[in-house]
Length: 586
Image 1 (tube, one colour):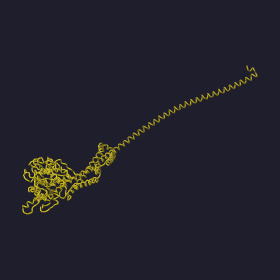
Image 2 (cartoon, one colour; image 1 turned 90 degrees about the horizontal axis):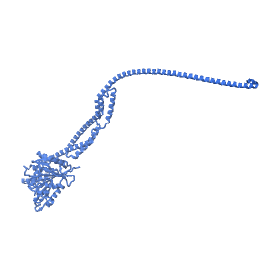
Image 3 (tube, one colour; image 1 turned 120 degrees about the horizontal axis):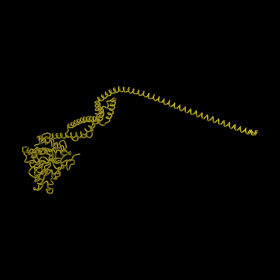
């Protein structure tokens, strides 16, 4: 988006210190910020002729440029006021108020010529402010421009009788607006009313003839006609009563002469509608930045006593503009790369793709903002710088990748290195454990993102640097393994002897246990036999007792049976005896 500058007050653009011109840095910074095309209106004239008042009205304000009321020149150097153009959107109106010419306090008029020249060179509308009428003195004063013709060569020495490089002259030299202040004459010629423009054209009309006097008369007029093909004239009545002129900038319009107010309004309207954008030969539109470069070019040329010709000025401007544009394109490239690139990139191709995209944008920025790069020397310079940028970013990518990978290796393998220092792997089988751990850490390293293109190379360098450590661990492992093998064999023998002894002890213990068990079993058997004998004896006794009891029982039963039988027999006998022989009963 085009920038728009709002200045509340004018600032000094070119200081005039002891008749030495110096550019004010603050004003240059203001111009640098203006990207819009500029319409530059400069006013030049004798001091104390009301120049600043007209510029204040063009700014839309009553106050701004200093308006003095004494016979002493008030404005020193050239002052600038940048305001939005009232009629042209996206344009800036640049007003230049110059130090009054003809100051009696100056040693000579050389300083006046320089200020006059700067106003002419910088403006697109050149307002020449004079008093009362157009006279030979005013024409001669404007003719100061002819003193610049040898220095302001438009490609070749101008031919005042021809039309040389008319298109370039018209595109470069400003339009002339001649303002006549406190005009008191009647606008008529031979009794016929004429316009102010006709009055100007008549005053600048050359005479017929070829003698030296006519040539001297015609020279300034032809020069003015040459440099200013487009001219306009305005007349201004006395603004107010003489006693009020000291407060002119504070007087409201209703206290000014109505004719004067109307004339100022017509003047401002014309400036707003007819003043063109400042343009250089080739149709190059001037913005604030280019105007700044023009100021530097011309002031430096004047200070060195060697004003450049128009062609060289354009070339110098092109050089400054294109140099600045190259830097702008480089800054755009740096900005884009800074936003898009995160070093290190995974692959070189990724980085080169981002470079090419930013490079294309940078070249587009250059092409859009450059001018007069006829042989493309600045574009080639840009391409060379971009190549250098590419090489530099590739180098940075390598360094970033190396730094990133080195930091990763330190973080990942650091604990392993510390373990090696503590001798954790200085043991039989330690080398295998070390190799196993190395493989685990390598896998962890590979899993880390954004290591960049140096990932494998840095890893291999690290592994190579640690080969001596691995070899030392292997040697220690082998030495310790052999020693441990011998010790282990001895240990095995000792353990075998101990095992044999333990087995013998176990056998003896078991034999003893068996013997004890046999004794116990024998004793138990003896006890059991004794118990069995006792039980047998008891059983025999019980059986004998039972037999005897049974025999006794049988004997009793036999006895009883016999007794019963005898009893029965007795009874029977007795019964029989009683019957046969009662004495038997006795």
